[in-house]
Length: 250
Length: 224
Ligand code: HEM
Ligand code: SF4
Ligand code: FES
Image (cartoon, chains in turn yellow, brown):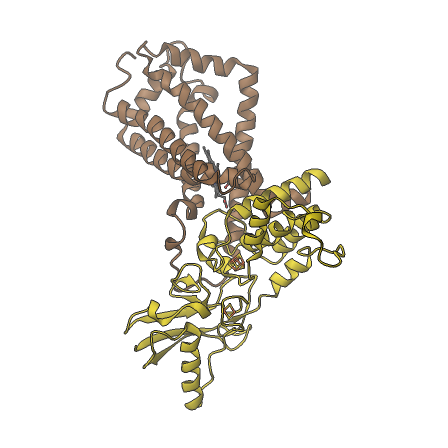
């Protein structure tokens, strides 16, 4: 396959960026999208040019590092897929592919396609944990968890913190991420002790990081590689409201 | 301001509550307007508007209504600004239309137009009837006639019809969204809420759009 790539190039977080166009020939349909960038970068280095900086780690869809906004979609055109799991057979010979970094006030661009997602770490640090020492693994029967709750918690825990939800949302809202993290703990017995403070503190941090609010467009759910459900956002709204009611609204 | 009301979720909760209150008002308003079709020379409609004006309860609810609109609009402006600031550099290619509906992305636009309509609508009916006293008194046209005259103007009838379309678009997304915002939704309820929202929007559209259509084409109001 021969492709034309329009890639966002930006020296650092201070300078303005712009698109560079690269002709990349002899790409095979079974390469992953990141391998396309490996090939591009090898060729750039051979020519003495600066390679494109992009984030990646596991390359198997579980770490959430590979943030790329491809042809107007977070992680590209495939449903429930990270960039590393997107393969070139998703495109046609002769295509022009536009690749941009996540764009959000909460995710400043560090270089080219690399953004700083430490805002998510700070949201987690604000309450996305269980501080009670849970000791050794319990006998399963000691901690009864209803099967539907276990299933919902498990589904929410699948969130890999990739930020595609923020990238895809017209408001750059982090509600899907935060709701997944709040839900996975709110549904399980271990999460009960800090249930209210968790919702309060994580939402506070989310707002402080400059993410937008939720207009329920559903773009996040559609873009999420782990197909985290919008229902988690309703749960977060509920948790947050209940926590505030208990604390006192005024 | 408390943390709740200044938080993003708190603001949305206020929007949802005021929005749902406005939805209840729409139903009430539609009921009143439907009395125009009673074929009784406008008597039922006139009687109804008279009752509204002279009930302390209704007058108090009217104050709440104005406050609700103002609060809804203020929060809308604030949230829309905040949401737009959350992405200072826009994407050059963004296929957001593949992942969300037009209705959901344009609540600010449909809402702003509704606000414009509300202002014009109040100027047209509320001001002459309730403030200037140029409608409804002895020797003046009555409220039913005022409606008829207004809607026989093609510009106003067209504007009214168009506004009702945008209101329906606003409701199509807003109604179900309010339940999600209030945390009253889950995987099982969501599809029903969506259907209910669209149903409510269609109902309001058919109801309110009937007035400009029927009055403009002379199919209603023959008795006054
Ligand atoms: C009869 C009039 C109106 C009704 C019944 C109504 C109803 C609603 C409802 C139910 C919602 C959903 C709340 C939620 O998502 O939780 C909503 C959202 C919204 N409304 Fe209205 N509304 C009306 C007028 C207006 C006006 C005049 C504006 C003016 C700008 C406006 C702007 C908005 C915006 C921007 C949102 C979305 C907020 C967001 O999700 O970010 N609405 N409306
Ligand atoms: S909710 Fe989905 S899109 Fe958002 S960070 Fe988690 S895995 Fe990524
Ligand atoms: S590189 Fe780990 S998810 Fe893509």
